[in-house]
Length: 211
Image (tube, rainbow, N blue to C red; front, side, top):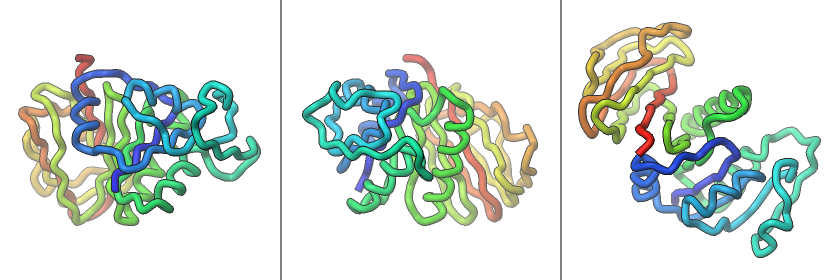
């Protein structure tokens, strides 16, 4: 089941957003605190609105089911939302509004995405103008792109046996060191970019157009 998690970062309407909406129709929708504001743009009614409500008011959407948590807690609102989605049987997580805003939140969400991907879930982080996907060893990825979009591959640990095709600068059996900018600012040539690695893990980030 596809679960949509609505988060508080930016969300830009464009073709890439619509393409992702169609590819991952939601079976369950959880809004994490201020992420509820994206519901109208995405055309959904959240099944659950969860968080400490430090960035939204529960009175704004009185018709929604609400789960309130204290501000002093050990988990992010996003993590609480993901836990509820997993309890409902989610196998794919689309984190809308995951990018932009506070850098610590964005980085934390990227690492959370990698954690859940390692547990066997498909995870997508999307803000319309930008999307990101965990990359793990031994898996094949086919990314939907548009010609000319910028694509960056970031190594969270040393990645070996990296294969990347459908881009201006392809890779074959390459080693990408953590902290290296070698994987930055590649360019998609067509509708699909194929990616895999034999060892290590990383994150691939795609910059989408504004239309």
